[in-house]
Amino acid sequence: MTNRIVLSAFIALTLSLGACIRPYQQDIQQGNLITNDDLSRIKLGMSQREVEFLLGTPMVADPFHKDRWDYFYSYKNQKTRETEVRQLSVIFNLGELSELRGYVSLDDLENLEPSEEDLHVGGTVVTRPTQRKYGLFERAAEAFRSDEE
Image (cartoon, rainbow, N blue to C red):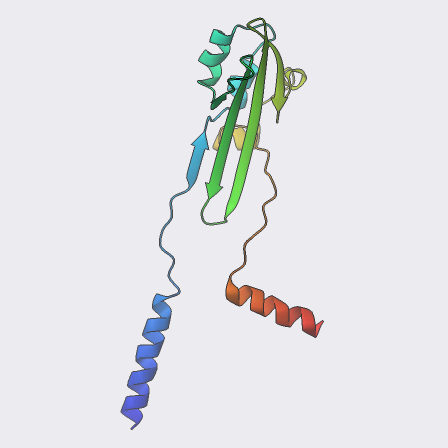
């Protein structure tokens, strides 16, 4: 009788431990990675060809606004579930660079220095706050915690 109880407890424990292991998921990196070094080379009045050489082909070339190029970069860390997002719009006037919009402007380029993140990640990162998605058990536990307080 005790052998059956021990055996069933062992089997239940073994099966429950298998559910605790998360498979490896690779970090997801999408878009154009633009570093501070790349941005520091950009000057007002550069041609479209020079900007494309420095920053790469734009992620979005709007057919309705031929003088606007959009660069987008996203990095999702699978362990922490955090997503870093950078967006940069390059505006041209008569084929020359006239404005930058996004996480850096033309005025900021003068004072742009490599940051600590620049050495590790490769650019200044603007992190959009993300909401953590809770699982079923975490939501149930949260419901009980809020009732007690």
